Image (cartoon, rainbow, N blue to C red):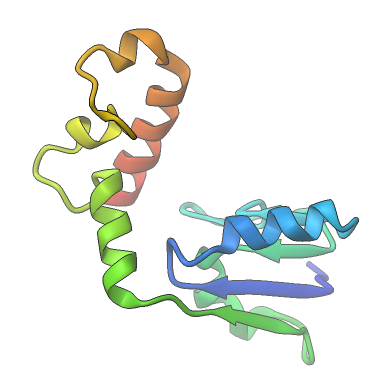
Length: 125
């Protein structure tokens, strides 16, 4: 896989935001398209932004530019906890919204809750 650049860092550090910025600017950047929780995949994007890429850095062609994002570790842990990745009761976090806990959120936003639950389960493994 040939990339013009790779953005990586720890989870919850802004890789998704930076991918969005690059895409808006006209650069084709995948977010966890070439590297995800399941490993490495082929991608047609010129740039990749993924915290899952870190174990594969030695497989990149020489001189591939790498941007390493850094975030306050306490904020990272708080963000993972808020998503339910570090909780004993993750489903409560999955259905937790900006205004508080929504016990019936799964009925109102089934797709979003399902996708978020899948994300949580894959990362808890």
